[in-house]
Image 1 (cartoon, rainbow over the protein chains, first blue to last red):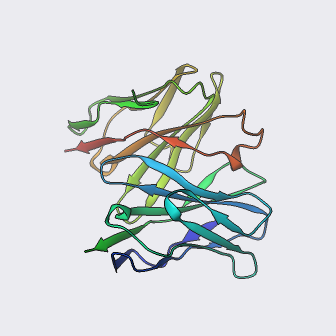
Image 2 (cartoon, rainbow over the protein chains, first blue to last red):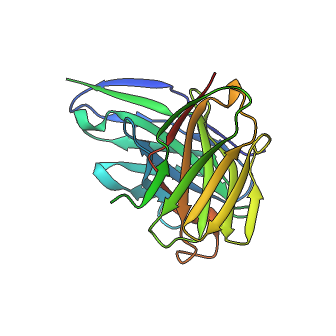
Image 3 (tube, helix red, strand yellow):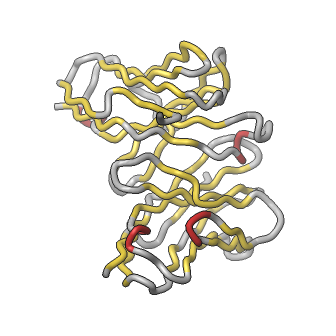
Length: 113
Length: 118
């Protein structure tokens, strides 16, 4: 069965430092990959998604992610974080054979002043 | 106004009670979903509906039922609530106009309903 692993449950980082949030998935079929962000007391919103084409995907708020098929990874990066990036980040995968999203368990990013 | 609204936003109920969570959207999307979020478990799909006459079970549908009253409305019911249904519940929508393949859809989430079952 398909699964998504977010290796870090919490990531503290100082403001203006770079950050990488890790996501690995297990699937032998073609997949679509997503990163969503959840700010406190809000629903999730899409940061970026990979459907096909260039493996480097740019999203909103300066985030980007790279699809690595050989390592089955889709890590999220930002070169310089802000206090306002404090939130929970979810990786999700769906495969082209079915419709369903599988969400990871989330990574809480805490940006420190 | 929010595109996807959920009512109530918070609810405390007792074991055995019937409860309904409602979701409405003004986005004109035809696909709608119900998820629950538990700490450390991420989001899990309860039910989904690709149009008014299409209802499908997700990975954790036991103890839940749904009703798609109209394209814009999708309700989740707990017929007899139990404490392990305490969770944050999210409704989401997506648009089949993006692509016929739902797996590639962007989903748009409501603000959530925090449900506590005592």
